[in-house]
Length: 265
Image 1 (cartoon, rainbow, N blue to C red):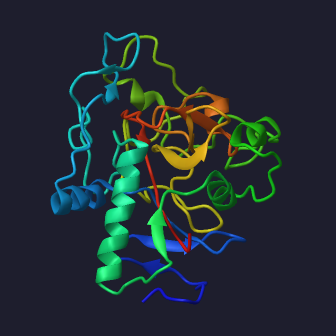
Image 2: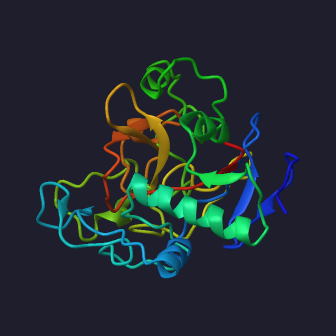
């Protein structure tokens, strides 16, 4: 049981999600994004409907449009080990509340421990940016040094992560951009979690695969923070370790998922 003590080792929960300590903090973060199978278990147990308004892009489109796609039919093939997409911030929070209730009832965790989406600072610590300056995520981004998860140079080294390589052009409009220099990875859309090497702290997919929700407001408006880039990211700015992409909390699209943390508050 995950109880009073802060543990320094990995913790595996009832869904098989593995958690590791966030460097320098008391919370533990899932080592990869929430998978299709995890979100499906939530929907099956509760009847929750995470549907409506999901934005996707097709060969003839000039922008992302709602076409009736959903998290379990996003418009491309996924395995149950791929990260779930098409979920907004409320969907992620609902998943966390359900998992907290479930595992407290099973005596796997006990109050005050609970599941939630990470804060912006937790996500930064996990990616290797523990000392960012600024009161808001927008200010912290403005003061960043521009490094990437793989180092100081662009483009990424071969096979580093799931980005918009040449393979991602399939089914996309003619204006679709890709990472320069012939970058290619095996996955035109999402990839099963853990398909690429973890970072120094044991976390997978903090760079690419899917953008991930954080709980913080980006600045003083309604937008919330998303981090990490995705399978559709082709530009240097999208893949910097410090990058924040503001999104309205009701946004659902085919590049956006979430990971969770286990924390005391």
